[in-house]
Image 1 (cartoon, one colour):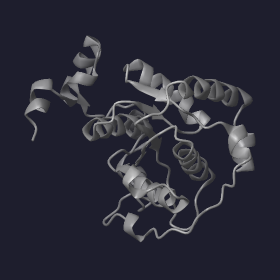
Image 2 (cartoon, rainbow, N blue to C red):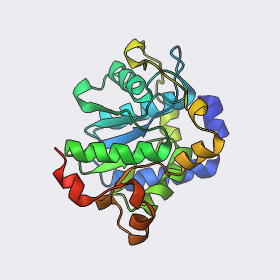
Image 3 (tube, rainbow, N blue to C red):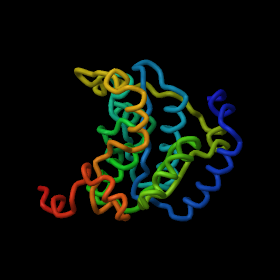
Image 4 (cartoon, rainbow, N blue to C red):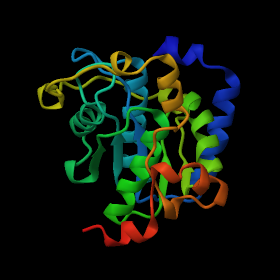
Length: 230
């Protein structure tokens, strides 16, 4: 954890803390969205440690009623959202307040597909809860598409005084059969396009600007079709 914290710039820390203080004024949230990160099936990465403990902190403080972990099996056979959900439950978050979005393979997809899941669950007040670096560029995505999602980014000074232990978890249920890692399915440029949100299947109602509806018309679920879905 120390290496991760020292590697991030002070600017990211200050910006994240300001965003957190602003987001705090809108709590409690119906749910926070936590993007996934690869897991090797043995020990968690520092980024996973940060994101999961921060989600747990937000829940125990009453800042959010639920947590949505997002992420498919991307770099390893372990479905990221399932791994994170298991960790959160082991830390003490009740399972009925943990939800998983298991389709996203890129960070922009983490945000949008979790947003759609939240809508299906009847959650209306949402915030993104992730590390300062990811918050910095996901903020731009949220703003660009005018998604009603607040920000509750990790505050590093708060993490420093927390007991960031790793609970014991059974990862077997998170293994995806027939897994093929993303880097074997997509080249660098395809993955970059995915990171920029180029593969998202949008719902027309979420594209507020006409230029976006025109641009993504081939990957857009029309409002009339969505209303007729069972």
